[in-house]
Length: 327
Image (cartoon, rainbow, N blue to C red):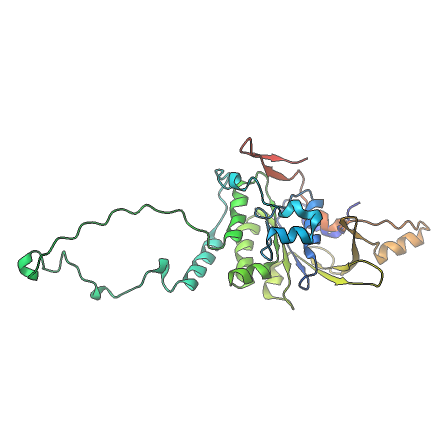
């Protein structure tokens, strides 16, 4: 049985292949990583650092030590050098990404490409200035030779982990894909930009155009303005009880097109995965039916239905050089 609430699964899946953006609001160091990766697993989507999963907080070794059962999600991808060199299957919009990169470039360099501007009148023109021989200049003079052509070097990514999401979508075999940003605040701080600029690029290039579902983890206190552009808002709050392991309260604050009533779930970590205790409504129903059979679920199924789409997840085949589907 799924641990993801049914409302969230139905919301992510939707009546058609509409792309969704979901944000998980949480305090720092609250292990929201466990939730977002298990959410992806239950909708049959693989998660791999450097492909569709961005976590700039720590190197993969540290993430693997913190979450040993999720090590395969963080370990270096043996296919990275292969799939990044594969020819793109499609062209993904990059309008907002290009605008963001230009903004970052101009913000870092005082002038484009590190050049220094100078007024036109201050530049000498030895060819058209009237000095055409040694008698005019009084010394030995040689007509300047044309500069040799410089080979263009491959462009170096300005926001490498962020730009790789566009590369992934251009090469994956099934759309819409699933992208996870964990967390958007850490990524923005890593690049020295505002989170809203990163969210704007993803939303307008990838989500609004139907190429990807996106799950953001946000550790910002309060409610940032970009939060109101999300299709779903969840909160993930840790708490501890004496004699028990870590537990969390998952609150569905808002799901577009669903009833506005908030629902809360108590979740815990057992045997290497998250489980969900029966909600108050479920307990009442079981008591009324005299059928008290408490069952520990995983992520609430409504979250699974919210994001899931038919079919299996895609990965890259090193031997075939093309994508294949996992069962």
